[in-house]
Amino acid sequence: MRWAHHTTKLLAAALIGCAITPFAPPANAFVIQVATSIPTDSIEDETELGGAVYAAIKDVMKQAIAFTPSLVELRSAKLVGDRLYLLILLADPDGEETLKAFESTDPDD
Image 1 (spheres, one colour):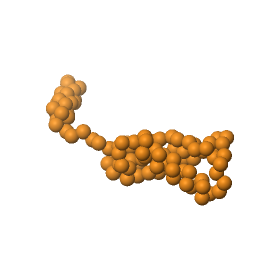
Image 2: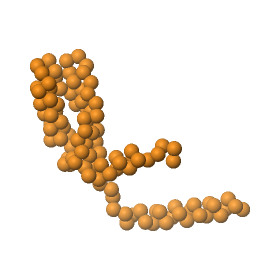
Image 3: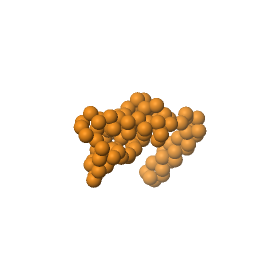
Image 4: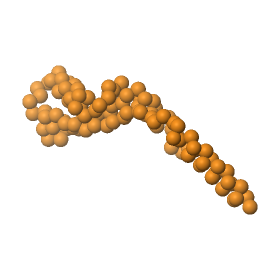
């Protein structure tokens, strides 16, 4: 009989959640991770390398996303042959909050 009480409480919670959900505004948090690459065969020094990485990030911001990021983070760079592969994380302010929530969540919970 105890399981019936538990099932009733669970069903009531699910019904209330379904009733409230249509009225909740959708979350518009944008977070994107983009991979791109740049040729390195013509790069002579660190200044040129920095300029090439900056140009690649600006190109991603112009061509690959439809929001203005408040967070731009170069997550990884890997040289393979004559190309430098970049992994870039971009987020808007709500996306930054979403990332903070993921980072603060204890995986054991």
